[in-house]
Length: 99
Image (cartoon, rainbow, N blue to C red; front, top):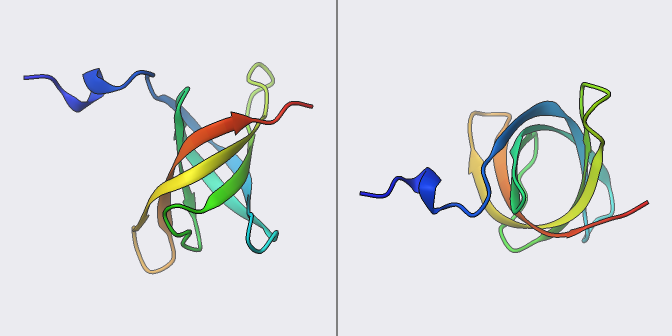
């Protein structure tokens, strides 16, 4: 049987770094925590939910000097409440913003 990991086109990389995100609707910037990222998607934790289907601009702030920051546009595909104050938000990367 094929494992779920084997069905992915891109492997996940643990990121564990600060990030910010901006919902297209409100334009307000919020802080989050990037859990992992791949060539096609991102999983992050935030203190507020974002509805699936929404467009979001994300900006990662890696902890080391080797990994460059990333600014990208995503479409939220899943938002799961993890406890009373946090949500895990999964997004499909739709585009990379260049400097």
